Image (tube, rainbow, N blue to C red):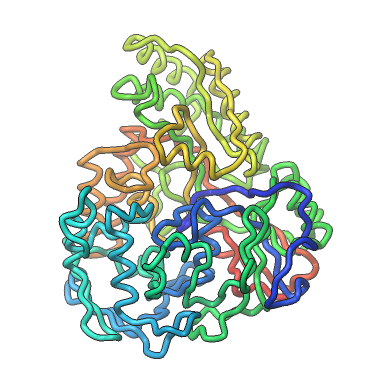
Length: 533
């Protein structure tokens, strides 16, 4: 997302805002489990939330057909049954007697209407690409649309709907716990922007009354007493506290003013295990960090751009940066997904472009100069509120020392500002970004970021052969066959150097002494429902 989504995100708020300044009309302040967060980029609409500050809240407010536990195992949630004779035609029955927090029933129509809204081009939803496999998506996704709803979705009765896909999909069933597939109540469609400011869901939590979302300060959630699923809250509420930086958050964690922090700042990575003792948390996670640059940026289109991206990749000493900056809590990337995912292959053909190789980097840079001599600076945009300065500067210095060019990081105040410029295609420089898994599949990482038609394709990657391979991987009869095709698709990404993979994350997190347990989930976020005071 995932967040959903899931992009590796930031913490956004003016420093010095204390918890005493926050209030809720539904629970005492001391009852809340306080967790770090940042200001969501957009109102909290599932189909338009593709970064993890909004995603971590959306996933608490809604329940989908399926759910993922802390280990990444998949279970039915609202689905009574999901059946298909061919992985192409599905009949989905939902459990009865579920309601939204406004008291209205969750029906098959709640899902179908939400999916159709998310897919329709005129609604410009960032997660619309997830509906691509459904018959009729091509008609609603064009501008202007030639239809208002997807013909492959049909409501049978209040508890049943059918889905027809254009091709068989090995990933469709597992994806049905992902945020864009959540249902929406009828009231949402009257004014979606207003709804996103005060959402009404069917998940384990709900907004804690009026004023629950203080922009750039906090979001308060309390348990939803009508929730019937498998993720019941084991706490009395969550307060997502928005910080200016992780150093302030870490100081609050140590002082007992913050209950759980999912990202230890770089300044404390060498000491947090000693500082926190058994409250330190270290886990592998499905999360990565990349450097992207859009092909419209001068010097980065066509053959010249390909040569420069490969040269830049080979100019980065990932091993050294991982050890010196991150104390080994991150590992050099070997592909475009994450090493914890099923089917991962760390020895893809062409992966030598991810090795530090100064001589080859200089050679490739010179070949690019022969096409068009380099001018200007190589700048990497990063959000200052996300503790990225140290590693971005280290990457820039490695590039500068290897290639002899002027390379530097460029600080943006907030993650939202970087994302807005990336989405608007006005960034005009390289930029830090990443992906945090929304469901445990390599295909989710690849389809979201590199399908030519995906709205979350940050780098304008467009290769019909790659699209074909991903579709073939989705249509594969077994996971093992799918993994083989995914490897071919990733080899093509390496050949095209779609962007520059830098690190896979290992989660370094911590809890306060006021919290008895704070488990991390497979994607590096907390298993929020199971944090206990």
